[in-house]
Amino acid sequence: VYDGILYLTSARNRLMALDAKTGELYWRYDHPNPDDLRICCGPANRGVAIAGDVVLMATLDAKLVALHRKTGEIVWETRISDGGVLGGIEWGFASDGETVFASISDALEKAPGDAGGMVAVRIADGDVVWEAPPFQDTCGTRQGCHTAQPGAVTAIPGVVFSGSLDGHIRAYATDTGNVIWDVDTVGEIDTVN
Image 1: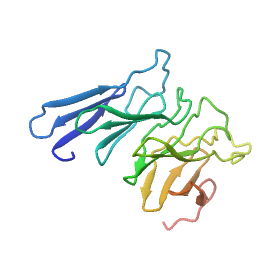
Image 2 (image 1 turned 135 degrees about the vertical axis):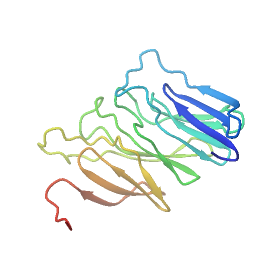
Image 3 (image 1 turned 90 degrees about the vertical axis):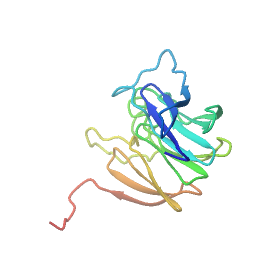
């Protein structure tokens, strides 16, 4: 809820703005899905966020869309990957109010080393600020290992965190996309309990 308006997404790329007190529908946006759209795990939403006067939505066809929060009119639309069954943004994105940060999956569409990576998109105009490519050769011969990054990302001032199907968690600099640190969680780890 922001400024008395409830913004919510539902299946198949739908975004609605409702009066939080009365439930009155202010506007509804139905993102046009391609006829050949193939997705895994149902048509679940891919996340929504508010930044200033725009509502941001990740779509099933690997796009970020900015809509004016009062009218629902499209401000910009940016494709962040080729998309596919497990393509694009799978489980959400983060924002620092000026930039949107998203990890890229593409797990079924591309091989390990080709799938994954991060993208930063400027909220003001939808331009890509930086792209961080997927990591190479992190899987070796591990069965089921992949460099895709389907998980939701988390952002704090100056840093965005993203996990990968290769068992790594990485911290990226929000201004450049450079990796600040990289921890491989696969293997034996001493625990406290």
